[in-house]
Image 1 (cartoon, one colour):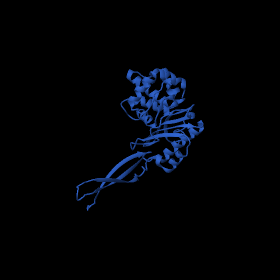
Image 2: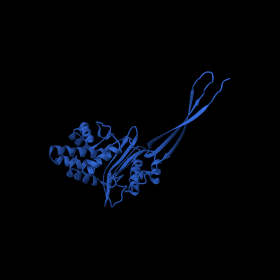
Image 3: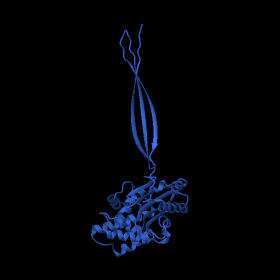
Length: 301
Protein backbone atom coordinates (compact mmCIF):
# COMPACT_ATOMS: atom_id res chain seq x y z
CA UNK A 1 0.00 0.00 0.00
CA UNK A 2 1.46 3.35 -1.04
CA UNK A 3 1.84 6.14 1.39
CA UNK A 4 1.69 9.75 0.06
CA UNK A 5 3.05 12.69 1.92
CA UNK A 6 2.37 16.18 0.50
CA UNK A 7 4.48 19.17 1.46
CA UNK A 8 3.68 22.73 0.48
CA UNK A 9 6.08 25.66 0.47
CA UNK A 10 5.24 29.21 -0.62
CA UNK A 11 7.65 31.64 -2.28
CA UNK A 12 6.86 35.36 -2.83
CA UNK A 13 8.48 37.62 -5.43
CA UNK A 14 7.79 41.34 -5.52
CA UNK A 15 8.50 43.33 -8.67
CA UNK A 16 8.07 47.11 -8.78
CA UNK A 17 7.96 49.13 -11.98
CA UNK A 18 7.42 52.81 -12.57
CA UNK A 19 5.81 54.26 -15.69
CA UNK A 20 5.00 57.77 -16.82
CA UNK A 21 1.90 58.47 -18.88
CA UNK A 22 0.43 61.84 -19.76
CA UNK A 23 2.91 63.49 -17.45
CA UNK A 24 1.83 61.53 -14.38
CA UNK A 25 4.00 58.93 -12.65
CA UNK A 26 2.47 55.64 -11.55
CA UNK A 27 3.93 52.67 -9.69
CA UNK A 28 2.76 49.11 -10.30
CA UNK A 29 3.61 46.36 -7.79
CA UNK A 30 3.20 42.71 -8.82
CA UNK A 31 3.24 39.90 -6.21
CA UNK A 32 3.88 36.39 -7.47
CA UNK A 33 2.93 33.43 -5.23
CA UNK A 34 4.52 30.10 -6.20
CA UNK A 35 3.27 26.82 -4.65
CA UNK A 36 5.40 23.66 -4.88
CA UNK A 37 3.98 20.19 -4.12
CA UNK A 38 6.24 17.16 -3.56
CA UNK A 39 4.91 13.56 -3.67
CA UNK A 40 6.86 10.54 -2.31
CA UNK A 41 5.97 6.82 -2.86
CA UNK A 42 7.06 4.03 -0.37
CA UNK A 43 7.85 1.47 -3.08
CA UNK A 44 9.47 3.76 -5.59
CA UNK A 45 10.98 7.10 -4.71
CA UNK A 46 9.66 9.66 -7.15
CA UNK A 47 9.91 13.38 -6.72
CA UNK A 48 7.75 15.62 -8.86
CA UNK A 49 7.06 19.31 -8.59
CA UNK A 50 3.97 21.11 -9.80
CA UNK A 51 4.21 24.89 -9.78
CA UNK A 52 1.27 27.26 -9.94
CA UNK A 53 1.60 31.03 -10.00
CA UNK A 54 -0.95 33.60 -8.97
CA UNK A 55 -0.42 37.27 -9.80
CA UNK A 56 -1.86 40.11 -7.79
CA UNK A 57 -1.37 43.63 -9.12
CA UNK A 58 -1.94 46.96 -7.42
CA UNK A 59 -1.39 50.39 -8.93
CA UNK A 60 -0.75 53.67 -7.15
CA UNK A 61 -0.52 57.09 -8.80
CA UNK A 62 1.98 59.71 -7.65
CA UNK A 63 0.56 63.11 -6.69
CA UNK A 64 0.23 65.60 -9.53
CA UNK A 65 2.74 68.43 -9.67
CA UNK A 66 0.71 71.37 -8.38
CA UNK A 67 3.03 73.81 -10.16
CA UNK A 68 2.25 72.33 -13.58
CA UNK A 69 -0.25 74.71 -15.23
CA UNK A 70 -1.59 71.91 -17.43
CA UNK A 71 -2.62 69.97 -14.31
CA UNK A 72 -4.82 72.78 -13.00
CA UNK A 73 -8.45 71.57 -13.34
CA UNK A 74 -9.69 74.60 -15.28
CA UNK A 75 -6.83 74.28 -17.77
CA UNK A 76 -7.18 70.51 -18.12
CA UNK A 77 -10.94 70.85 -18.62
CA UNK A 78 -10.53 73.50 -21.30
CA UNK A 79 -7.98 71.46 -23.26
CA UNK A 80 -10.01 68.27 -22.91
CA UNK A 81 -13.07 69.91 -24.45
CA UNK A 82 -11.32 71.32 -27.53
CA UNK A 83 -11.89 69.43 -30.76
CA UNK A 84 -8.50 70.33 -32.24
CA UNK A 85 -5.11 68.76 -31.48
CA UNK A 86 -3.18 70.90 -29.01
CA UNK A 87 0.44 70.47 -27.95
CA UNK A 88 2.29 72.92 -25.71
CA UNK A 89 5.30 73.50 -23.49
CA UNK A 90 6.29 76.09 -20.89
CA UNK A 91 9.74 76.75 -19.41
CA UNK A 92 9.76 78.74 -16.19
CA UNK A 93 13.18 80.42 -16.13
CA UNK A 94 13.11 81.23 -12.43
CA UNK A 95 12.48 77.67 -11.24
CA UNK A 96 14.13 75.89 -14.19
CA UNK A 97 11.08 73.65 -14.60
CA UNK A 98 9.57 72.65 -17.94
CA UNK A 99 5.97 71.53 -18.36
CA UNK A 100 4.50 69.76 -21.39
CA UNK A 101 1.06 69.03 -22.78
CA UNK A 102 0.86 66.24 -25.36
CA UNK A 103 4.62 65.81 -25.37
CA UNK A 104 6.20 64.73 -28.66
CA UNK A 105 3.27 65.59 -30.93
CA UNK A 106 4.55 66.99 -34.25
CA UNK A 107 2.83 69.86 -36.02
CA UNK A 108 3.92 72.17 -38.83
CA UNK A 109 5.64 75.47 -38.09
CA UNK A 110 3.92 77.82 -40.54
CA UNK A 111 5.27 81.37 -39.95
CA UNK A 112 6.47 80.53 -36.45
CA UNK A 113 9.70 79.30 -38.08
CA UNK A 114 10.64 82.84 -39.08
CA UNK A 115 12.34 83.48 -35.73
CA UNK A 116 14.40 80.35 -36.41
CA UNK A 117 15.44 81.71 -39.82
CA UNK A 118 16.48 85.00 -38.22
CA UNK A 119 18.41 83.29 -35.42
CA UNK A 120 20.33 81.27 -38.00
CA UNK A 121 21.02 84.41 -40.06
CA UNK A 122 22.42 86.16 -36.99
CA UNK A 123 24.59 83.16 -36.11
CA UNK A 124 25.98 82.96 -39.66
CA UNK A 125 26.74 86.69 -39.54
CA UNK A 126 28.61 86.17 -36.28
CA UNK A 127 30.63 83.37 -37.88
CA UNK A 128 31.52 85.70 -40.77
CA UNK A 129 32.37 88.52 -38.35
CA UNK A 130 30.03 91.09 -39.81
CA UNK A 131 26.67 92.64 -38.93
CA UNK A 132 23.52 92.20 -40.99
CA UNK A 133 23.51 94.25 -44.15
CA UNK A 134 21.06 97.13 -44.55
CA UNK A 135 19.05 94.93 -46.90
CA UNK A 136 18.97 92.01 -44.46
CA UNK A 137 17.96 94.27 -41.59
CA UNK A 138 15.04 95.64 -43.62
CA UNK A 139 13.95 92.12 -44.62
CA UNK A 140 14.24 90.87 -41.02
CA UNK A 141 11.91 93.60 -39.78
CA UNK A 142 9.36 92.75 -42.48
CA UNK A 143 9.65 89.02 -41.78
CA UNK A 144 9.26 89.21 -37.98
CA UNK A 145 7.16 92.29 -37.29
CA UNK A 146 4.81 91.94 -40.28
CA UNK A 147 5.21 88.23 -41.06
CA UNK A 148 6.05 88.99 -44.69
CA UNK A 149 6.50 85.73 -46.60
CA UNK A 150 8.43 87.33 -49.45
CA UNK A 151 11.04 88.59 -47.01
CA UNK A 152 11.19 85.16 -45.41
CA UNK A 153 11.82 83.50 -48.78
CA UNK A 154 14.78 85.80 -49.47
CA UNK A 155 16.36 85.30 -46.05
CA UNK A 156 15.71 81.54 -46.26
CA UNK A 157 17.89 81.54 -49.38
CA UNK A 158 20.44 83.80 -47.70
CA UNK A 159 21.04 81.31 -44.88
CA UNK A 160 21.35 78.39 -47.31
CA UNK A 161 17.89 76.84 -46.93
CA UNK A 162 17.14 73.55 -45.28
CA UNK A 163 20.66 72.16 -44.82
CA UNK A 164 22.03 75.25 -43.09
CA UNK A 165 18.98 75.63 -40.86
CA UNK A 166 19.27 71.95 -39.90
CA UNK A 167 22.88 72.54 -38.89
CA UNK A 168 21.94 75.51 -36.74
CA UNK A 169 19.03 73.67 -35.12
CA UNK A 170 21.26 70.73 -34.22
CA UNK A 171 23.68 73.19 -32.65
CA UNK A 172 21.03 74.63 -30.32
CA UNK A 173 19.65 71.26 -29.28
CA UNK A 174 16.81 70.25 -31.61
CA UNK A 175 15.98 66.54 -31.27
CA UNK A 176 12.48 66.06 -32.65
CA UNK A 177 12.07 68.39 -35.64
CA UNK A 178 11.51 66.92 -39.12
CA UNK A 179 13.13 69.12 -41.81
CA UNK A 180 11.50 70.23 -45.04
CA UNK A 181 12.62 72.23 -48.07
CA UNK A 182 9.49 74.34 -47.62
CA UNK A 183 10.10 76.39 -44.44
CA UNK A 184 6.41 76.57 -43.59
CA UNK A 185 6.02 72.78 -43.71
CA UNK A 186 8.77 71.89 -41.23
CA UNK A 187 7.31 69.58 -38.56
CA UNK A 188 8.37 70.42 -35.03
CA UNK A 189 7.42 70.05 -31.36
CA UNK A 190 7.10 72.54 -28.51
CA UNK A 191 10.08 70.84 -26.88
CA UNK A 192 12.38 71.87 -29.74
CA UNK A 193 10.85 75.33 -29.97
CA UNK A 194 11.74 75.93 -26.32
CA UNK A 195 15.37 75.21 -27.22
CA UNK A 196 15.17 77.91 -29.88
CA UNK A 197 13.63 80.38 -27.43
CA UNK A 198 16.37 79.66 -24.90
CA UNK A 199 18.98 80.44 -27.56
CA UNK A 200 17.24 83.75 -28.33
CA UNK A 201 16.38 84.88 -24.81
CA UNK A 202 18.94 83.40 -22.41
CA UNK A 203 22.74 83.81 -22.41
CA UNK A 204 24.41 80.99 -24.34
CA UNK A 205 27.47 80.14 -26.41
CA UNK A 206 25.72 80.25 -29.80
CA UNK A 207 24.12 83.69 -30.13
CA UNK A 208 25.88 86.78 -28.83
CA UNK A 209 24.21 89.24 -26.48
CA UNK A 210 23.87 91.71 -29.36
CA UNK A 211 22.23 89.13 -31.63
CA UNK A 212 19.82 88.08 -28.90
CA UNK A 213 18.89 91.69 -28.07
CA UNK A 214 18.26 92.44 -31.76
CA UNK A 215 15.92 89.48 -32.25
CA UNK A 216 14.10 90.00 -28.95
CA UNK A 217 13.43 93.62 -29.88
CA UNK A 218 11.87 92.60 -33.19
CA UNK A 219 9.74 89.97 -31.43
CA UNK A 220 8.52 92.59 -28.95
CA UNK A 221 7.53 94.95 -31.78
CA UNK A 222 5.33 92.56 -33.77
CA UNK A 223 2.38 94.45 -35.21
CA UNK A 224 -0.98 94.20 -33.43
CA UNK A 225 -2.74 91.96 -35.95
CA UNK A 226 0.04 89.38 -35.56
CA UNK A 227 -0.01 89.33 -31.75
CA UNK A 228 -2.66 86.74 -30.91
CA UNK A 229 -1.84 83.85 -28.60
CA UNK A 230 0.81 84.95 -26.11
CA UNK A 231 0.30 88.59 -27.12
CA UNK A 232 -3.45 88.85 -26.67
CA UNK A 233 -3.45 86.28 -23.86
CA UNK A 234 -1.04 88.17 -21.56
CA UNK A 235 -1.88 91.30 -19.49
CA UNK A 236 -1.08 94.66 -21.08
CA UNK A 237 1.46 95.49 -18.36
CA UNK A 238 3.83 92.64 -19.26
CA UNK A 239 6.49 92.48 -21.97
CA UNK A 240 5.83 89.86 -24.63
CA UNK A 241 8.08 88.91 -27.51
CA UNK A 242 6.50 86.43 -29.89
CA UNK A 243 6.02 85.00 -33.34
CA UNK A 244 2.74 83.46 -34.43
CA UNK A 245 2.00 81.13 -37.30
CA UNK A 246 -1.21 80.31 -39.14
CA UNK A 247 -1.91 78.40 -42.31
CA UNK A 248 -4.81 76.40 -43.82
CA UNK A 249 -3.36 72.89 -44.11
CA UNK A 250 -5.13 70.74 -46.71
CA UNK A 251 -4.94 67.51 -44.71
CA UNK A 252 -5.37 68.76 -41.14
CA UNK A 253 -7.31 72.01 -41.32
CA UNK A 254 -6.01 75.31 -39.99
CA UNK A 255 -2.65 75.23 -38.21
CA UNK A 256 -2.35 77.92 -35.52
CA UNK A 257 0.81 78.49 -33.44
CA UNK A 258 2.19 80.99 -30.96
CA UNK A 259 5.68 81.01 -29.43
CA UNK A 260 7.72 83.48 -27.42
CA UNK A 261 8.68 84.90 -24.04
CA UNK A 262 6.68 86.66 -21.34
CA UNK A 263 8.39 88.79 -18.69
CA UNK A 264 7.16 90.98 -15.83
CA UNK A 265 9.46 92.15 -13.03
CA UNK A 266 11.29 88.98 -11.88
CA UNK A 267 8.92 86.67 -13.71
CA UNK A 268 10.09 85.20 -17.03
CA UNK A 269 8.83 82.19 -18.92
CA UNK A 270 9.09 80.80 -22.44
CA UNK A 271 6.12 79.10 -24.09
CA UNK A 272 5.06 77.43 -27.31
CA UNK A 273 1.45 76.50 -28.07
CA UNK A 274 0.53 74.73 -31.30
CA UNK A 275 -2.79 73.36 -32.55
CA UNK A 276 -3.84 71.55 -35.71
CA UNK A 277 -7.17 70.23 -37.03
CA UNK A 278 -8.90 73.55 -36.43
CA UNK A 279 -12.21 73.91 -38.31
CA UNK A 280 -11.31 77.54 -39.05
CA UNK A 281 -8.75 80.18 -38.21
CA UNK A 282 -10.85 81.76 -35.44
CA UNK A 283 -11.20 78.50 -33.50
CA UNK A 284 -7.44 77.99 -33.47
CA UNK A 285 -6.67 81.58 -32.47
CA UNK A 286 -9.19 81.31 -29.63
CA UNK A 287 -7.47 78.13 -28.47
CA UNK A 288 -3.88 79.43 -28.34
CA UNK A 289 -4.98 82.77 -26.85
CA UNK A 290 -7.03 81.14 -24.10
CA UNK A 291 -4.25 78.67 -23.26
CA UNK A 292 -1.83 81.62 -23.06
CA UNK A 293 -4.20 83.37 -20.63
CA UNK A 294 -4.50 80.22 -18.52
CA UNK A 295 -0.72 79.76 -18.39
CA UNK A 296 -0.25 83.33 -17.14
CA UNK A 297 -2.88 82.82 -14.42
CA UNK A 298 -1.87 79.34 -13.32
CA UNK A 299 1.90 78.99 -13.75
CA UNK A 300 3.31 78.92 -10.21
CA UNK A 301 7.03 79.84 -9.93
